[in-house]
Amino acid sequence: MCDFSISTLAYFFLGYGIAYGVHFLSGAEVLQQKNGYELVRFFFLLTFAAAVPAIVSGGIAERARFHPQLFASFLLVGFVYPFFEGISWNHGLGIQDWLKANFGVEFHDFAGSVVVHAVGGWIALPAVILLGARRGRYSSEGLVTAHPPSSIPFLALGAWILRRRRYRFLRSVLGSSSIGWFGFNVMSAQTLDKVSGLVAVNSLMAMVGGTLAALIAGRNDPGFVHNGPLAGLVAICAGSDVMHPVGALIVGAIAGALFVFLFTLTQNRWRIDDVLGVWPLHGVCGAWGGIATGIFGSSALGGLGGVDLMAQLIMTGIGIVVALLGSTLVYGAIRRFVGLRLNPEQEFEGADLAIHRIRASPDSEAGG
Image (cartoon, rainbow, N blue to C red; front, side, top):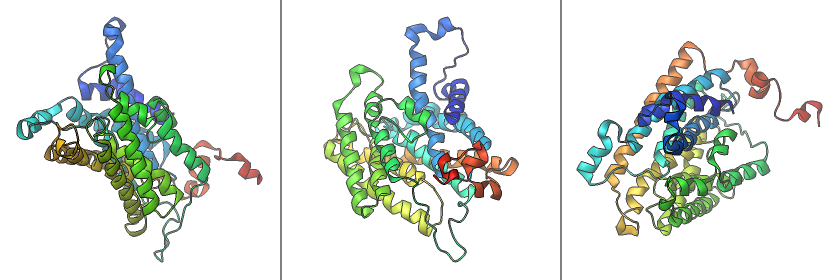
């Protein structure tokens, strides 16, 4: 709730104007023109913007300070995210025009594989590295200490809520990584006449591919099984309106396998303590989705066409660079001047108790 509130202020007063050149400090009679279309569009696109700090929070959980992270959220949603959003979705800096002039088409990202998910995941990576691992996560002998989920049933419930809910606004309020993928992807058309059943079926097929690939690659691990479909859905956002359903299935399957492989690699070999795996889930799978649109969206592979692999590669790369630079500046400055991490005593107590003075499960204090 706090993250979403900060994101709303940042996007209302700064971010939306940076991305689209529209500001909301005029009189109400101006704002309500065209039945308040620009306000409705702001409300919808706010849910994209608010997803970015929600993604980041999953990677830095259990050791980040509360108020510095809120400040980081303001800067990310107010400046970093809308800078790339404007480039991708509002022809900012003329990059889309340059791509069209050189490759015949613009960069295509229908529902945010790159603009939202990849940017959010790559923003999270420097934050996770600058914070360091959780207390006791890695021993001095080189062993990895497991931190299992507190509740597998709640893990499953949360994953299904993300996939089945219809209102993405609630997703941002609840702080999960994306809500209502089916309704969200379909309504990314933003007008009823452009709503397509292809988007819904492609989202379904990508989810199925991600689930089954994660099931196999993750050897039945429930954490992977419930993140696999999210990986597939992240990847299909960009090209869900142009791919053939079989292509969407393949894209989702590759995303599910990528998540399992890279989550294991980052945690065990690279020792990057990304708590919820937001870099592989959103950063890598989102980038894969952007690139895959240039492959499986082509008419040669049964897609609708109007996409180009080089255009997708170039803009995806720009998004990653913007995310890495912006995140390093924001979190590097906060770490230098304010501090990012809880002190050892607070981390030992746990973030819930140290920040909010209450445990997530009060009954546990009484031995219940």
